[in-house]
Image (cartoon, rainbow, N blue to C red; front, side):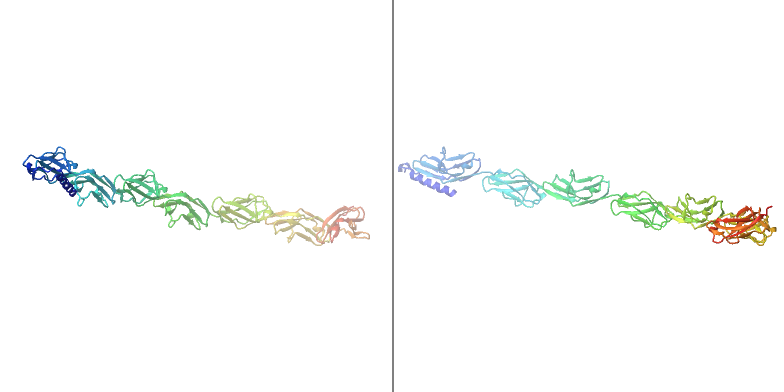
Length: 617
């Protein structure tokens, strides 16, 4: 540019020289410049003065030019510019004229050095730690401009450009940044631009696992560093918890539904970070959901108790019997085999886990003992009509029930341990047993025999007889009662020796044996006397015959007897000629009597005899 200005100036000088009129020789020579104007550099708004010294034989006039253009009013040997502006910078020269001609000075350059001015100051920056930051400044002023950046008033080494770039910014670089712009005219310092380095949150203390008992409180906390303010959001099993926005999380009355994974997201303007997971374990004290139940078993059987419980596993069990721990009884169920009386009592179980213990309600074991016969009923022998008593003694769980049996048949209302039989009859004789029962079973006694001795009873009395002398006579008695039956015959009240049979036979009877005959029948239960039977012995003969036209027919057996007229006779019949029974007694109205026995039709053999008991007149 300066070269262009000089070329322009030379051209102007040349043009000027050509245009100037040549002076006449009489006017003398043109002025001679003795001191040329000197180039200057002044500060913006400063004062610049150009001057020239010339000699001339005649008076001289001056005209200053700026970049080839005459400066109005600049007609002195010097030209002063006050308050120099950049528009005043350029080429200055002066033309000196006298009568002999003109001379143009050399060109002097005015340089106006403008101090630097910040046009666009550096701007504050906010970056995340580790990112890049850059500051820049736009300045005007005389070039060259030089730059020096400062952090918190301290010059940054090598930071001499209009822009400042920072890589992987750290918190130590946060602060106030400014730049000083310099040139030949001076310096200017920018306003401060703040670099804010936001540090992403970092977890310095992780939340820790917690183990609490149901109903207690639990708390988690996190410690974090980073640009404040830090914000927090707690999560449970990955789901944000409403209102849980502090560095600490408190849980009261913790329940099993709150067991799980807890984490927290810490945030700030620079980012977020998620903590490690902390596990909340909620140990639930044991609770008995099904109590052991009372048990009733029969001696020798098995019994079992069980409990159902909820709570944090593992659950441990300890069974107690009447308050004393049972060795090895550490399961949820308790089994007892071959139960005896020493197992009777109260059973309970203590259920424990890491969170505590609980004792079940008490379950009672009742053992029923089957009945056992300790005293058997004894044989009895009583006389008919007396009282018989059987008794049994038994052990076993009360109540005991009794049922007596006779010959295998249950006796109505015979349900006591003692069986009393009044007015015993032969129908009650036999085998007596009793079954003793309770809820646990039954036991049957051995058999006790009831013997009923029946006193003798005459069922058929000896019958009076009338026979002729020399005949045989038999008296017979039929008796019932407990055997053996013993018979003692009596004649007119005197015992007959050797007469121990139910029949008394008299052979070849004579009138001397006529009289009263009776018998006493005896057994273990007593004795009974028969009615007396009279024996009548006569010497009158009675002739029996079966004339023609008589005998057996549909009316019976008809025969005739020759008896004294007016005598009393007795007709006797027998089926064996041993036992005779009178079948008719009549008085003969004539010497021949006809007699018909209709009962003969019922016998295979029928024998007859007649005896005259009263010979008559």
